[in-house]
Image (cartoon, rainbow, N blue to C red; front, side, top):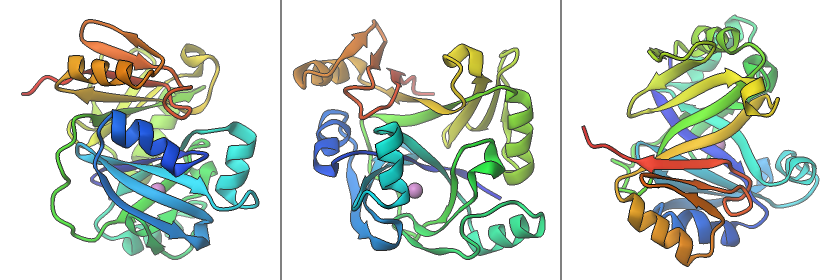
Amino acid sequence: MVSKIHHVGIVVENLARAYGFWRDTLGLPLRREAELPDQGVRAALLAAGDSEVELLEPLRPDTGVGRFLAKRGEGLHHLCFETPDVDAALDTLRGRQVPLIDDRARAGLAGRIAFLHPSACHGVLVELATPPDHGPLPESPVRLKRLVVGSRDPQGTGRTYQALFSLPEVAINGGARIMLGWEGGGTVLMVPAGEVGGLEGMVALSMVAPDIRGLIARLEGAGAAILPGAAEVTVEPKSSHGIHLHISRYHFP
Ligand code: CO
């Protein structure tokens, strides 16, 4: 039903300020920016390898994203899977009585889109998108690799996602953990909530970069709060608009 992580949606206070980190410091190429009045946001899509990062600034406080920002601050908001036919996917989900926010697909920044109700996916807001064919994504110096989801029952949560979206399982020696998705198309790693401070839902993002030293130099130059290592860097949420972000060196196959 779905073929990759199309994007991860991040709520930010101010799009222009968020560009300072995501576009200018990390170097993710901006693909599109538009105001989406029906969602109450100004949104932008930035290329991040085979997937994208979507930044969402609320237009008003009395919208879903505005209330999210007031209550939880900047941070991870939704996960979007690409599907070849969002209308057919919705028909299938509706036939299985899966709770949906959008009964019909509508126009969004990522193409024809629809949101499932968060209760369908253990509290994670999931979007499905059928993008227009704009050709290959531009090269980006940092690539999205993995979304980490905290759960009281990672195996059960994983089985739900597999049943809903036919997500393939990626073999890991993970104990209670389970990883779903695609090497190269993005993965979702379900971990016990106890390992991530008791948090449930989307908790962290992993990315990869071939030039980790150049990236660390850019982060330092921008004054970002980071914990650098020999082949990795962790960016503190105060510098990455609420995201626990880990970036490691990308090994070309
Ligand atoms: Co989205």
